[in-house]
Length: 286
Length: 259
Figure (cartoon, rainbow over the protein chains, first blue to last red):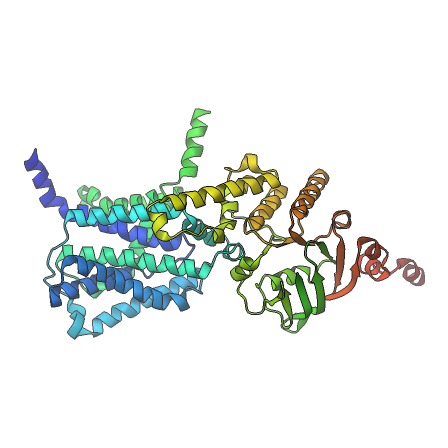
């Protein structure tokens, strides 16, 4: 029994832990989406977190806990700085500005070779991430977000998403709340990046580019942004689907894409949509 | 309580408000009427800080409101409803009103995360207050419904409850009975009287003459961006300029001459 478990773990530990870090990423963009902002900087924040933590462990031999904290603090700080001017934008314009920011980060890493290794990336990062680090991070993040949803912060986020002007006139400081969502999301993405870097041994600038940003967004949109279950479900699906379709060999990616297209076509509000499910079951009962 | 001192506003050369002076005394129900496009909603947008006046100043409780951002103006005690209803449609009625209590929920993030007694007590109090306000507009029995399911008239009443939740001293109502049927209007009239008797000052924009005349103690008439008359309902009703603004010039002469 234990032997099979051991075998399973040695084969799949990477996949299971990636489930965790992807869940963190999906939740990080859920935060800004729940505030009505389409911010696409999460991949860049993940990268900043990954580099900050890895450089600390590689150069100073700092304890893993400190590295993780730095991996959250630096992206949060950067988010605070760029959030003020960019969050005035909305819709597509915000998406463009944050995408551009991501590109700036990538080029910055490419050109600071002495510090970040440039295009060659960072090699030999100690594999300090244990399964319980990931589990704890996911559980704590879910707990914090679940508590926020039910409190005045969560209501403020939703009100801003629905009608920012009306929210302001009800005494909600919309700009500060949007900045809060942006900064918290950056910290979560940074944590995911730091954990992921200490799992994969190697990081390079191209891991945190446009593709990754779109993947993060896809997870959350696919799962649904009406509550916390959606992003988690979306992260699991996007992470597991390519593995489950391994049997299809060359057609794997095509099938993967087809499934995603079908989900978006038939479940536009995400897989986890409580309102739709209630309707479905009440129709059956009636 | 609220004072507009020679306020003007233009949009790219178009003069929407010209030299508007208005004084809403504490404890009154004040009506602002005028034909479509006279600039009434602009007055509300200026008061609530959504737009800055081009010239002139607005004072609330003797404090100037120039440069104060909208959410701070709400904190000072002005709340409003909107002509084109802006409730939070995907939220429940209760959450809509509890959101209005936002600034009165003073708990720390720590208390919120750990669900400490202080946090739970504050949330409970806000929910109780929200239920009470929903009772004022007779929507309490629908508290847990999603706001989008309400009828037009009910949505307007929900907006009033939500505005009251910010605990304002001055309540601005932008066409509260637009789209309501007669019985709904009569009911709302009664409810606004109740609200007023609880000590709120009310400033409303309204087209429905019977409603305004029946409710307001003071009425100002706005036409083409100017205040053309101000006074008690009876004076307004007999003011020739007001009749002209609403009904047009006595048409008999003109039709005779063209004929």
